[in-house]
Structure formats: structure tokens, C-alpha cells
Length: 158
Image (cartoon, rainbow, N blue to C red; front, side, top):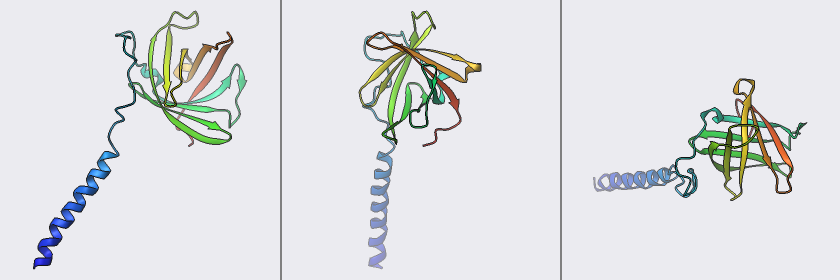
């Protein structure tokens, strides 16, 4: 009898401890900035047309090879993930993003992406093919215009 009275509290304690370990793995990453930096005010939005998975298919009008491609997965509300290859090995990192009106001559919109490694990009963007092709364009530090073409895909092959 005494063994059973000890067994129930022990099992309950183990279950409670195990549950707390499992639940801490589900906590949002509060340190990650899914919103624009301070000072942006209300001059931003999340474009739901970006939601979904995208594969890089062209860089500056040239097709990209299997280990030169990358993928972007936009979850919505500023959350996403970036997938890429480095030395033929697949990597991925979290990304945060927000959109704004743009003064570009190409489009009315620009996207600001912050990658987990601390780098960031601001690019003009627009859609063609009924929203299934995403164009990203930016100017490098030396003045070269870069244009990347992404196709919507149903999944990321990672």
C-alpha cells in the first residue's frame, strides 16, 4: 500500500516536469524582431501576396543551377525562413520582413528583409503570371542593378 501512495506523486511530478520541458520548446522567439525598427511609424505593411514558398529560378536573366538556387518561405505577418546552399550543403535561417510603398520607377512596393545572421536587404518587388512569379530588384554598392526571379512552389525540398 505504501508503495502505491509513493508511486502516484512520483509519476505526477515526472509528467509535470516533462510537460514543462516540452512546452518551453514551443515558446515564441521574443528576441527576434518581426516588426520594423523603431521610428518607422505606420509606414509599413505585410503583403499577403508574398505568403507561401518561393524558389529562385533566375538571377540577372540567367537560369540558376541546383546549388545556386535559394528559397524563401513567407509565413505572413513578418515571419519567414530563408533556405540556401553554401559549398553544396543546405542551410536555413529565420528572416523577418515588412513592406512599404516605394519611390522606385519599376514598382510601387519595396520589401525589407532582416536575416537571422544580422544582414538585411531592401528590394523593389512586383508580381507577374497571376501572382506566381515574384521579381526582386536592388542596386548593389557599386551601382549594379540585380534582378532575381522567383517562382511560387508548393513546398521547399529540404
